[in-house]
Every structure is written in C-alpha cells, then in structure tokens.
Amino acid sequence: MGKIIAVRGYANNEVAYVAWDIDAKIDGCLGFEVTRVYVDESGVVKRRADGKEDRVKCAAWVSFKGQRNPNWIPQDTGVWPVQKLAWRDLTLRKKRDGATRRPDEVRVRYEIRPVGDMRPGLEPVPPNGIDFADIIKRDNKGRPVKGPDGKPERIRVRAYEGPRRPLGYLAPATKSNDVLVTTKRGPFRSTFTNGILAAQWLRNVLLDDGVIEPNELIDKLENPNDVHRKYLAGDVIPLIHDFFQREGNSISACMSSRTANSKTFSSPTSPVFT
Image (tube, rainbow, N blue to C red; front, side):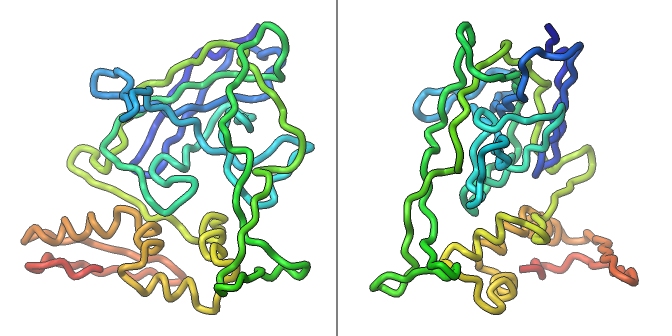
C-alpha cells in the first residue's frame, strides 16, 4: 500500500502552502486531513489555556458528491478531506467564522493524514461538532424575514445537506517542516491585503443582516474604523505606519491598471496613512 513520503510547508504572513508526495496509490484513500499545529522554537507542540495541544484542522467548504453546502458554512478537512496533493491554508491568519485575525510571528507545522470510508479496523475520524448553524430566515423570494424588532430573524439549519460520511484514518500522520509565519525576510518586510474580488467571505459579511445595501461596501472601505476594512487591509496599514514613524525612510509605490503610476513617499514626523 502506498504512503506519504514527504511533506513540505511554506508561508508568508497571510497564507501557507503545503504539499506532499506519495510513493504509490493509497488503497481506499478519499483524500487527506490537513491539520495546522502550533509549535515553539524547539518544535514542541504548544498548549492552549485548557491544557490541550494547539491543533487546528484546516477549513474546507467543498463537500462530497451527494452532499451540498448551500449556505457556504465551513467544515474542516476531517469532514471534507483534501482530494489532491497540495493545499493552501487560507485561514492561517484569517478565521473562518469572523473578522478577527490570528497572530503572526508564530511557528506552525502541518500534519497530513490519509482518510477513507470508515470500516472495521480503522481509527475513526472524530466528529467536529459542527452539525448546525444559524442563518438568516428568508421568504420564498429570497428576502430576509424581519422580526418585531425590525432585525432579520435567524433559523437553525443543518450545517450541510446530505448524509454524513463517516471516515477513518488509513495511516498515521506525516509531519511537515516547521514554518515561521512572519513579515520578515532578511532585510525585507512584506505583507498583503486580503482581496475583495470574488470573495465569498465578504459576500457573507455583507449579507449578515440579510441584505446588501447600496454602497454598503464603499461605505465600509471609506471608514478607517470599520472592522471589515481593517480585516481586508491585513497588516499593510500597520506596517506603513511603522515605516513612516522612522524619519529618513522612503518608499516607492506602484499601482498598475491600464497605465502604471508610481510615486516615492518620504517619511514625515507622523504617519500619513489611515
């Protein structure tokens, strides 16, 4: 039977990329569970406040055939395993269920474990407890139903449609190298915004109250104190603030569209970006 023979992880300060190789086909394999593990500088697994090891199964949104995820509610790769030999951990910094961000300057490694349909002799993949979710109640025209207080009503629904598919582990987990999640690369620092184009997450944020109002996104982006604007900006604005607080620094910026424009900014005595 085939097995995983190598796992490598890479990260900037927003997203991690992990890839693995196998030496032959793994019989009965439906995919791979991908787990992010937080470690210290010595490679020892960190522990949470409750004493448990700090492990997070990576988020997954794409279901098996015969199941549906119409409300785009995240599960994890222990429910919907990765059906390829590489994965981008998009929730390395961005949480799957809110606008708060995980810290950077941390070390992680990834554990990859093949899974298949549960059968006697296999260790079962434990349930994650995400069986139901609260969503906006809508009428037959898709409009949000409002309660006496004028706010959209919420209803509890199954987290996804279709039968649950019990899975079992086909082999022990294979570990990647340890990866530092950081903006710093030698003399350079780099960070990234969280894009808004074709972002299902952003659509769900705007629909949190049941409807997307005219100019709702523009109003958020123009408000420096808006939590979702800060989330989308990532660590870029804090990095620019830090840079311009150091007198004598300069930065060259370029924006590309149909024509390219560039400008050099010199460090004032206080930040100019908000």
